[in-house]
Image 1: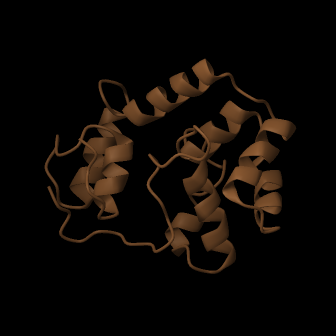
Image 2 (image 1 turned 180 degrees about the vertical axis):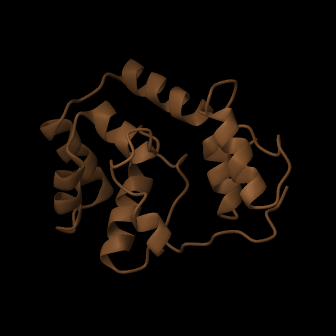
Length: 151
C-alpha cells in the first residue's frame, strides 16, 4: 500500500525508530527541533507536546516522568538524542528493560483491537484510504508520511 499524497516532513522520523530502546522518543525530539527551526507545519505545532493527554508526546513524557517544557528546553541546547534520553532518565525515571519492552509493545499496537481503532479509521478516511488499510497508529503515521510499512 502506498499513500498517493504523503505528508512529508524532512527530518521527522518514524515513531518506530528507537532512541536507546525507546520508541517515539526520537520523533518527539524531532518535532521539538523542527518547530524551533520553523519547519513544523502550523497544524502540527498545536498537536505537539502534552496539551492532549492522549497524545504520544504526553504518553511518552508520562512514561518517563518528565516535564515536556523542560525536555524542550534541554533539547534545544543542542544535545544528542542519546544525551536527551539520559537526561530524561536522570530527571524523570529510568524504566527497567521489561518496562521499556511493555511501553514499546503498547505504543506499537495502539489502534489494534482497542478504542484507538476508531481514530485510525477516521485518519485513514482523511487521506482517502479504506478502513483496515493499516491497523495501528504507528503504521498509520508511517503510511501518512510515505514510509514503507513494517509488516
